Image 1 (cartoon, protein in one colour):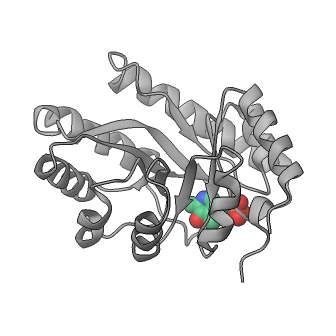
Image 2 (cartoon, protein in one colour):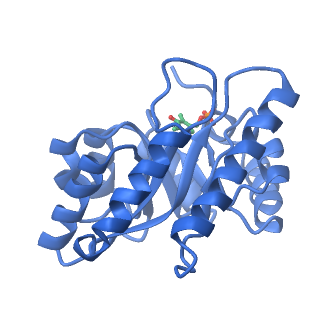
Image 3 (cartoon, helix red, strand yellow):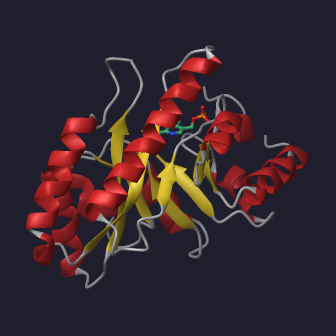
Length: 224
Ligand SMILES: *Cc1c(COP(=O)(O)O)cnc(C)c1O
């Protein structure tokens, strides 16, 4: 169960850095989500489409749902009507699909490009070369992508106790963000989101300039 004092301290710390807290509620009950909702929390993150859809239908409609897990193209339509921000776009085909569903619904869906910064071989996301190629394709077909808006990038650092390494990875992440902004998004003020930092490294992330923290276990306790 969430410790409300801890939540209050965390939200103050994050807000004082002008960043947003996404409470990662995967595997957690609706009751646990509502406890934080009652404290004013509105941004929640989920990793699994089915779980997100079920929770969204049961919980208050003003919750802003973030999708942070690996997303398959055939599941985009299930979350497209309501999702607030998709953090995990890692290929053009997926962007195409989100755009297509957005068009059907006459809405524009906000997304982040997931970037691979850690050293763990299992992680999803694009490396630096991939993300430049991704943006070049997007730029060439920009007129067709009216129903998606790229807001920034998302990443995860290597799971390690080595603070220097995490710091280096976050700095590299911010550098990639700046290069992308300068090369592709100078005329788009809404390219403003750097989603990095989780329970174990959120302080380092705030120091490095994260604008969006995704925090689960620290808030809700360990997942079973
Ligand atoms: C689970 C998850 C988080 C939250 O991780 P914690 O260590 O529990 O804070 C953040 N981002 C992604 C992509 C996740 O899958």
